[in-house]
Length: 113
Length: 110
Image (cartoon, rainbow over all chains, first blue to last red):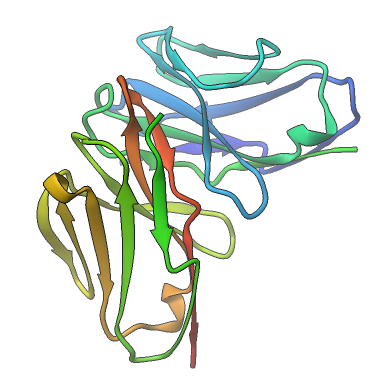
């Protein structure tokens, strides 16, 4: 059984740039969620995708967007990067919406300078 | 929205000691999850425990949903148990969004 994989592991971007983070869900999982974790804080929910549609969104501006593909993999896109976007971005997959354990990838550490 | 509070915020143990971590939540929930984040940032799901008690090796968890709290027990702690322990519950009105506590940072010294 393949776990959740994320790429890249680290990324450095300049303020104003755009970034795309990628996630492959655990085999058999059809739901993908994205979380942002700032240093010293708990993860904060960004949004969730279920069967290629956004299914719930946290308190993040529209410049945070995403996609889910037919194979359930997902992308997180962030436009017009700000310094405060520097964080660990975590992808999690689950079998069903909100009723099964979340399994996280190792995350992408984004630094915005 | 729902609030999640974890205690203590920091805990330092000697190897072999036992510990109890607590998670309080402000509203009724239909599930609760415990996670361990190791020093490299990897977040591991320990328990999915809406109610009752579960055990996995040296770790066990109990959720008392009616009283809105959960406990994570670590027995015979090892240095590899170090890291941050988070509990998370679904947000009010939407189970698709997990709300995390601020975590308990555990340090186990040899």
